[in-house]
Length: 357
Image (cartoon, rainbow, N blue to C red; front, side, top):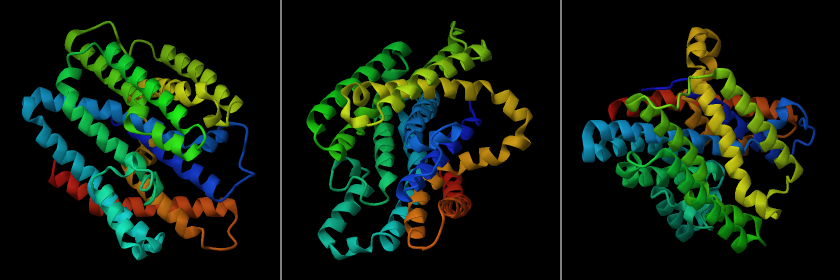
């Protein structure tokens, strides 16, 4: 069971993060504030879209492996996940320190701490190592911790009602983000650090888990939940939820100052991405019929992990080039990021994925 058109969402999520960081780091004040392009001003939400996708894909992978191998599935699951995540993560981290943060090399104790924490994927758990090497890497730590959570709970997840799983994930996230707001309300970084731990992001993963479980139940028991029932209905739901979600954000855009935004809005955003994910799955047949049109975007989804890991190294390097306009900077950032991602996909990632399949 494979939904290859999800790669289109992966491409969109990765490129959203890249453009957002260019806007922020280049201080691109003239970037559009109206129309479709305004999305990229909140392109950091691409990370939350990744979490919803991961909740779906990782739960699907673990469920099918557990179905095939029973309790011994964890070896195959871990081997594949580590082969997919670790090599490029270590490579880009090493190059980032070398070219963008060489001052870390002058502080041996702090460097050693960073290396140990990043290798163990616990760097996001300590404020002093959170974002110190290739900033967006904090989310890779969250992803790896989610994989561990799935390993520990999959035998229960496949037996629990999907709605109960989603409810538990949402309630845990609300409780965690409430605590984060109370503890970090005077410090934006500390509040961000606390709220973006795994339990603070669990509602995003939960929506993905919920969709996976509903599809598997549909396959096994012919339940009444049918994502292919009405394309137009789900499209209307996606538009409606988006029409509610994003105006709320723009009205209270100073996100961390309002408790209701810090605690509840991410759930609404995850619900939006949940409906978009359903649409991506439903549109699979249409996309396959027009693959020659979608092929470039599908390929960008294939290399999206590389895009995510390479882009900040490229941006930090380009900042040193003087005289670039914002559009030129963005064009160069996208070109070099995609070029490096293509190289690492074909010569690092793909060979290891095939070897440890």
